[in-house]
Image 1: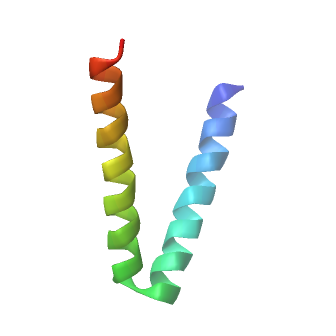
Image 2 (image 1 turned 30 degrees about the horizontal axis):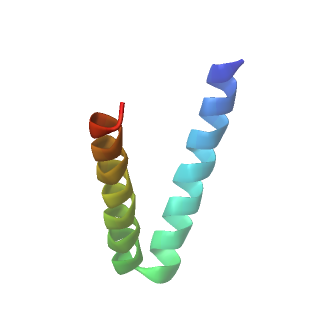
Length: 51
């Protein structure tokens, strides 16, 4: 059941990302990518030092 949910979310995310890139250009994708990577790095650092 998890794989079905993950598959649907993957398809929806790919579709939304493609539509966003086509409508707003690659600048918005770069901004979103940097934001997500920054949040992931902050979470990794927090989990590393606060366990």
